[in-house]
Length: 309
Ligand SMILES: [Zn+2]
Image (cartoon, rainbow, N blue to C red; front, top):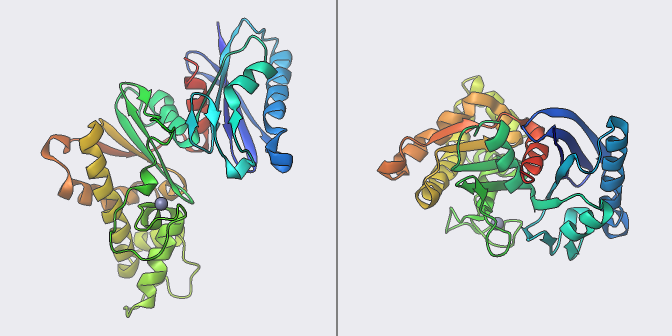
């Protein structure tokens, strides 16, 4: 019997999980992300928490297959060049983690890529070895998996789906500094922006009027049959569905998994993405299934643990 740990570092909390190497999640817990002093306590805090859990459960170093860590930054061979949310500049995360936990192997990955791996292992992508996951949160993240492997790329930025250009005429800037990125239309913030722009134009009566405009309020209104909200959802879906059709010709995925906060809208979300996907996709990719993620916030710890196997 072997154990492994999955760690998902976020800007406010670090999520952690104890797994068997066969995919049972025994326990999950969280610690605070101490970002002060350039985040220098983050890795020692994680190591101390893991050591504490090993003592509590009577797990020895030889029984521990390793620790996988997901980081909100591009990661290349265990090294992060810059992760603003946790205060890190250049950091060899793999090396430091292995020094903090002698005798235990560490593997490091980008958090969105790692979440994709988690969904493939234990969630909506179970049984697939070719999959794309899109995370629609505050931003748009993604992970591309080919033959069961994450495509991390030459700079650790593989699968940065949020920055595919989907509108050559956009004048507003994306967080990355460029214009017309998918993130500007398909993230939670992007959907709220589309709603704001739509309501600024002449429009018929809508229950969105005077509401706090968010991805949630838009999809709640869609479910009540609101026409303006439905138009906003169609615009979001067209950008995302067409981008996914373009991506599908590159890796020919078996499934496309939609996760992140926006996916909490549930199955009502899918037709808005499927229709434009089918309109633009290459005939050979027409059977690609678009499904909702099932692991929620646990995708990160699951995928992090999966990196060890
Ligand atoms: Zn961008």
